[in-house]
Amino acid sequence: MADHHEHEEVKGESLLEKISIKSKVFRIFGREKPVHHVLGGGKPADVLLWRNKKISATVLGVGTAIWVLFELLEYHFLTLVCHLLIFALAVLFLWSNASAFINKSTPKIPQVHIPEEPVLQFASALRLEINRAFAVLRDIASGRDLKKFLSVIAGLWVFSILGSYANFLTLFYIAFILLHTLPVLYEKYEDQVDSFAEKATAEIKKQYAVFDAKVLSKIPRGPLKDKKKD
Image (cartoon, rainbow, N blue to C red; front, side, top):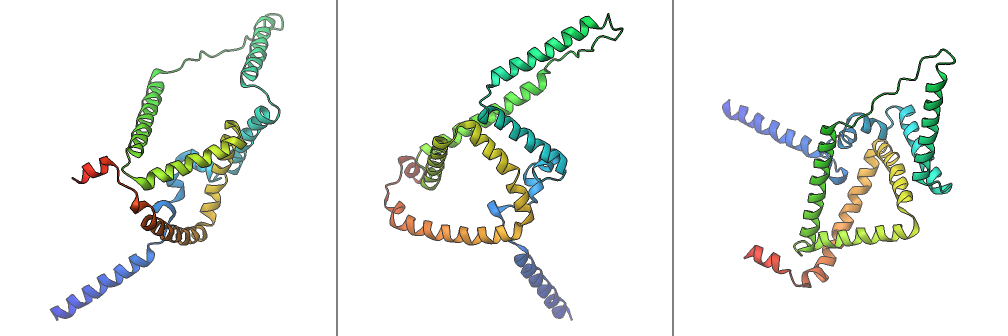
């Protein structure tokens, strides 16, 4: 009777293992959490995933208007800021002086000051990210990981090509548009994209294995890597 009970438990565990293996679906970048959580959650993720279509459309419209203003109409940022300040100061000045003649209350101009704590937090976070980037660059330049080195070189080469066709503002606007389109499209067609990505990843690994066997394995290793092994 006890053996039968143990057999049932083993059978149940094996069934659960099969179910868990089948439930493990390939996700891009090894993602295990929902897209909303990967994007940080909260209101920024809601905007990128178009949870509120009015807010997302407004953000996209404002970004497009800024790009058109500075890129297509060739309006300069400093000129725009000065013109806005001139307009705002002129309206407030005239309103303050005319209020006595038209029996209206003077405009309540708020006192604006930048709190110290958020600025320090932002500076601290920025410092950490910059130090992390320097550490990554140092690790890449040390010759420890040839695969990472080639990936970074290829990425920088692609960015250099893109930079020769468009300025920084246009590239930033393209990234802005992609952030407002790709996540929501991926969330909608998640299974199809992940299935295609799985096949593409397998093919890339296959080609990289061939390239590694014929080329990379014949390149002498860096001194840091040899010392690490010793």
